[in-house]
Length: 267
Image 1 (cartoon, rainbow, N blue to C red):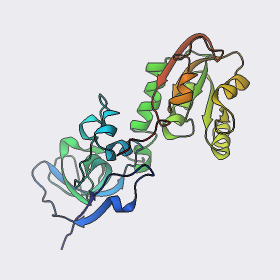
Image 2 (cartoon, rainbow, N blue to C red):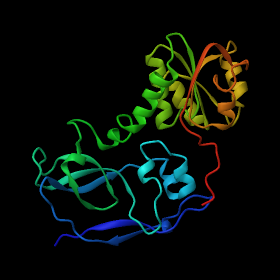
Image 3 (cartoon, one colour):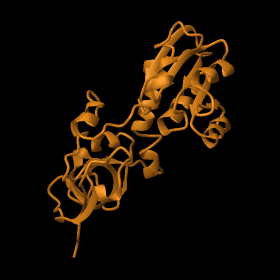
Image 4 (cartoon, rainbow, N blue to C red):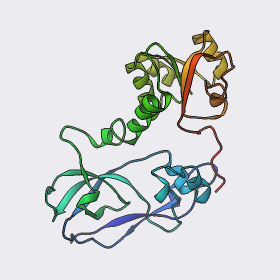
């Protein structure tokens, strides 16, 4: 006999982060497959930093107003969160989808969901679920589009990326490099800095060297373009926020992507 389970959001995390007790796994109804639907069995759930905003309530949701996350960013306590998953089709009444197909969908955190075909995307053959949730999904779109269409670098520019060792930061670094830029990244550990260097970027540890000092050391003539993931001190020294600073040179542009240096909401 088929069974089903779901994750319930029980309580909002405190300042120290969430705990296992903030969620509860419980039994729930087994869905039936309607016309033009499939039964999708969850294989992998995407884990994204912005979930922390969703857990924080109104304060956290306000941070994402205007983005594609806005409609589902405030998780009510007692609800089953909806997020991106990769699943396997168990049953299909939808043309074009067969049992065993690997698909992406935005659905509640359940083992089994009935999903309309129009809300499904097949995973292309040869791709892994982890790739779909990282370098080929929203992370890649954020990093690549932020660089190409917001920062708009020119070949030969010196580009600085904060939070460079994270998923979005790495995409931004490689996008700048692909577009002919010299890339400098900052990260918070020796291991992350070495990883950035191993991929062909210059890098420094902002915990051991202030941002302004690291930039002056690696690019004494200044930077042209910045992709900022953290805000705070980093954004203060970006080309857009400080056009008269000694860290900038010539044409200046910046893409502000995140504010991870800000304190989390108190909720």
